[in-house]
Image (cartoon, rainbow, N blue to C red):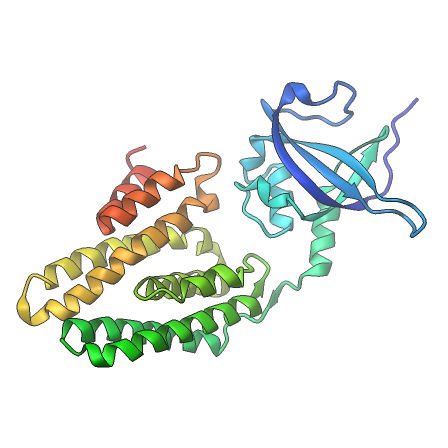
Length: 307
């Protein structure tokens, strides 16, 4: 009997598991050409209210899914997630196609589904970015005043910066819905509450958003560029802190570059530019926390030059 392919149906992914390709049933009618497969357990939506939802198993090739042109990478892109993070499909809504009673993800149908659900670009630059910039400047000034022995002025500034950054980062992330980047408000808002670190978080957020909105082609390498700037700032701050008359400025730059290093390393390690060769995030993050800009420099050399 000839195989029959039906029109796409929608489903919600319930579980994502990476399995050896040998676990794909021999009767599965779709090709899974890789050493491993990604098993998606999904609840297929019923055609009518009277019908009960059906749980189905779907397989996709992995790790070839980490390649930019693969089926799985295109599905992840359609739902707004990086190609190196297939676990992000947990909870995602996808379209299915069927053949001989089996299912796989319909890539084109999933892309159409999410194009209808999410506008191409909404709420890009906003006044909240001004508040983020002001909060970052307040945090820098507060740290400078501590070094200049004006702690009584610095304390309320630290508090004001934390409140301003938490609110503005959370609000702007909530309002930003771009085709390539929809930030999650809670992590950014939480980062805005921690003195010194919140300035680094604000710089990272504004850099990423500027790249997404104004230079989408450079968005994937923005963390790499941010880390290069962090290394330079770290060295400049250290040099300025060596002299008494420039010590407050140098200490301010040095401390905030140190805080920015682990933020940048963490974000870059998750970026799609690494493909399937993802850096060991925990190890490099620990190095940046302990050694600041020096750890960021070694990270850049290892991931971009001395492979």
